[in-house]
Structure formats: structure tokens, C-alpha cells
Image (cartoon, rainbow, N blue to C red; front, side, top):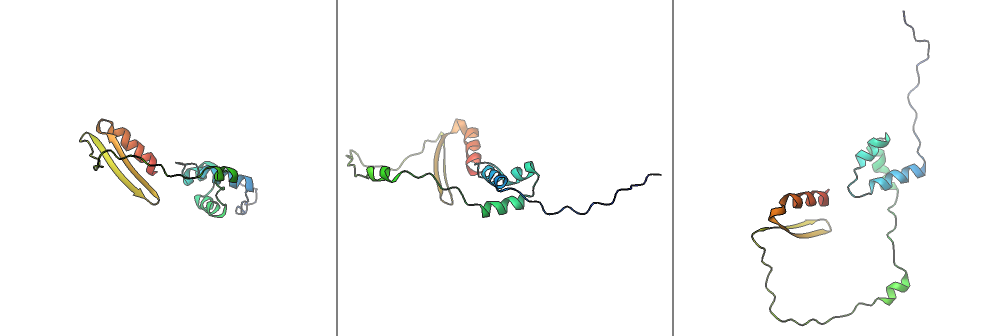
Length: 128
């Protein structure tokens, strides 16, 4: 006869994570093409926790140019001669033409028809 003499272990308590660990996982999630669910699964945590950390931890500030550099570069008007009337662009029959608007992203794409599979793969990566 088999008997278990150990006392039943109480339920698992609330886990705590270091700020460094949280920042590391959030940084991994912000890599283009990286899935939050896969990062969570690879580290053994629930994806909802990782989504909460993404909301709570601010995005790192984008790199800014020094103020002196901004003052040195002044916009200027450049006059260009127009030699012939501008005609609308004609898309050759042997090419793929795609226009996509998704949020702030606007893409106009012309791709050779012979390379359609490569175009489809590129679009999948872009829209991921």
C-alpha cells in the first residue's frame, strides 16, 4: 500500500518580477515582428501580464538631434525647371501596383509581375 506522508502544498502565491525583467520582456515585445504571446510563452508567464506591462512601462524616448544641429539645418526652397507637362503615371501591364493605407502608414508599391511571390512575402512582413 502506498501512502503519501507529505502535507498538501498550498496554492501558489503571487509571483513578483524585478523591474529589470519586466523591462527586458517589454523591450523584446517592441521588436518589430515579435509577438507578445510568444515572448510570454517563452518566459512562462501569462500574456495578459505582459500586455499590462506594455501599457504601464513608457516607450523609450526617440533619439533627438542636438539643438545646435537643428538650428544649423534650415529648410530652403529649390526652384526646379519644368520642361514638359506632368502626366499621370501609367502602370505597365506586367507589374503589380498596390496602394495601402493602415493607420498612419501609407504605401504605394510597384512590383514586377514575375516577382509576385516575393511581393506577397514583403507585404506579409510589412503588415505583421
